[in-house]
Amino acid sequence: MLILFTARGKLKKIAPLLLLPLLKAGMLIPLALGALFLLAGKALIISKLALLLSGIIGLKKLLSGGGGGGHGHVETAYVSSGGSGGSHGWGRSEDAQNLAYNAHTN
Image (tube, rainbow, N blue to C red; front, side):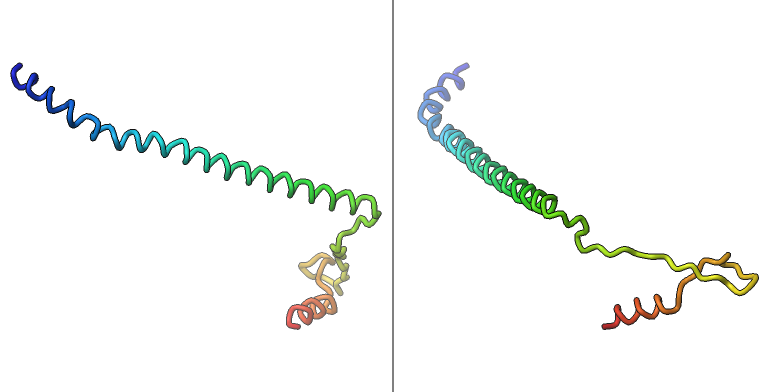
């Protein structure tokens, strides 16, 4: 018990120094949370702006009447085989294959 009483007097002198890092951390946590909220607010504003712009573009396309959007229509060619083949009449057209290859190489 004697050690406890003598250590208690030293603890009173050292206690403020031991609590200093805790106070510093207590001050930094609200700053970190504030920065996090600011970043989240920016992200929310940017997402609202993106949604607004996509809505404007969608309305513009809807009201302009152009339904297509640059996507081409792909047609399948029916090639009749000359007899007993394993393809059952479906195959690739040579012209379409050459056209696709030429477009790929250029």
